[in-house]
Each structure stands twice: as C-alpha cells, then as structure tokens.
Length: 400
Image (cartoon, rainbow, N blue to C red; front, side, top):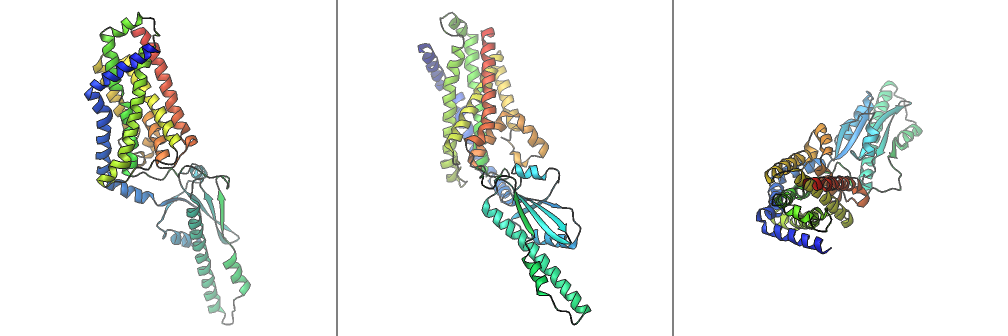
C-alpha cells in the first residue's frame, strides 16, 4: 500500500510539472467547447427548431379522394413532420422512438378510418394534440363528403330530405383508433431519440469525451520515459507487484478524468450563458451521470495505457494516440454531430467508443435518462476499458 501511494504521489507531481499535459487535458477542451458552441449556435438553433416538429410516419396505400383530403388537411399542421412510412419496419421504428406516431389510413365498407400507433416516449399532451388533429381532419372530410352528397341528391330530387339518423351516424361515429407500442401504464424515462441537442448540449459532452481520451498523451509520455530510463526495470527488483507501476499511473489519472468532467460541466452550466449561449441541462439522474463518467474514464485509461505499453517511443505514442483519438472522434460524432450524418455514417459511428460515451451523456443531459437507460453504453465502455487494461498488464511484463 505504501509503495502504491508513493507511485500515485509521483505521478501527480510529474503531471503538475507537465504544463503542456495540463493544457491538453483542461485548457484545450474548454476552448473547444466555447468556440464550437458559439460558432455553431445559429446552425444548431435552426436544426433544433426543425427538430422540434414531431415526427409522424404516414402509411397511406389509398388513392381515394377521401384519403387525399385528410392528408391535405393534416399537412397544414406544421408542428408535425409527416414522413412516408415503410410498412415493413414502421412498427419497429415507433417502438424504438425514432418517430412519435404511425398513422395508417384504411377503408372499410366505404368509410375511411385512421389507426394511430403511439411510441413509448411520446408525451401524453402531444398524443392528445395529435389524436385531436387527426380526428378533426377525419371529421372535416366526413362533413365535406356529407355536404357534397346532400348537394348532389338535392340537385337530382327537389323533394329530397336528409335523414337525421344518417347525419348523426356520420358525425358521431369515431373514425380514429389509438393503440400503443408498449403497455399503457408504463412510462418511458428517456425522451424520444429524435430530440436534437443545442450547440451547448452537443459540444460539452462531445469535447469532454475527446479530452478524457487525450489522457493517452501525458500517460504514455511518463510510462515510456520511465521505461527508457530503466526506472521500471529497477522497480521489478523490488518486492512489489509487477502490476503496481501500471495501477499507480491509472489511479491518479482516473481522478484527473473526474476533474475534467466537473470542469466541463461547470463551463456548460455557468460559463456558456455569459457568452449568450444556452446553459447546459444536467438531466435528472446524478447517478447516471456518475456512472457514465466512471465507465468512460475506465475506457479512456484502458486505451491510453495500452497505447503507452505498445509504443516504443513518445513520438510513436503521440502519433498512435493522437491520430487514433482524432479518428475515433470523427467517427463518434464529436466533430460532426451524428444527427446531420447520412444513415450509413450513423451506423458506422457505433464502432467508436467515443460515440458510446457521447450517447450516454446525451441520454442523461438531453433525454432525462436514468441508470438503466445508460447501462448499455456504460457497460460497453467498462468492458472495453477492462479488456484493454488487462492486455496492457500482460504486455507490460514482457516489455519491462
């Protein structure tokens, strides 16, 4: 234990003397957050305004005038983004909350009917508005059809009189059916995935993830320096665990990562509003935020220590770590938000651990996710970090 504490103290002192390393870990991400949040503020505001429209899948295989009339009336409501539906995948799309509703128009016995399928995370108030909107359009269509019928029959027969039972049946019969892609008494804790972030909500977690992975540079520099100077070889002659030099480096950097998280969150919450940008919202679950912070740190440190063990020189480590980070960031939605990427590129982003971290933080900040909601991302990051650290420990015994 004494040897471990001494190693941790040594690492802290080395890092405090490394001005460039401190700037890389703390100053660089803060600068990126401020610059990118302000530079993209108007563009994100435009995308967010467009994203605030509610996505609706429209499944209409009908060619009747009645269906065309209903669709025309519905498309006048600009708060809804009407999208053509792929009948084969529509229900799954709704179940995954990629759209709020699936509206299917059908005809039965010459009458037009509307079936609404509601996504799990759809707000009940939005559901009520949408159902009323569809019901209103269906009622207007029926009234127009009834008036045309009356006018036509009156023209053919001057003695024609409307049977009140027919009009009541047309007006009172509800042509809208609502069903749910989940049990009605369940409530979803996560906001729909189609909700888009503001520039601050995107930039803070994105560059936070990037900064945590950049701990590879100072971490690798100290380990390679000690290996080249023979320090690690001399430590092997002492009665200590061969893993102690590696563990002793990971622990202080873990706490440094947590300081990075705290600093970036403070920048998002308090500094960005001073520049006229939005304030970062932290969501409703500090436990989920802590879980993402810890798991992301383990993944970043696993990546960093593995690069440090594999690289022979500091230049190699800087190249492998730096270029690797940039590639992972480009693929993971850090540099370019995922929601502006084409679908093919969005699928590729799933291979980047930075995307896992970014998705987890956005689940917390943007979609009010809890611990259960971020478990897939946190679990993947933790597993990646654990495997990388274990591999680094095995390789380090051969290289020292």
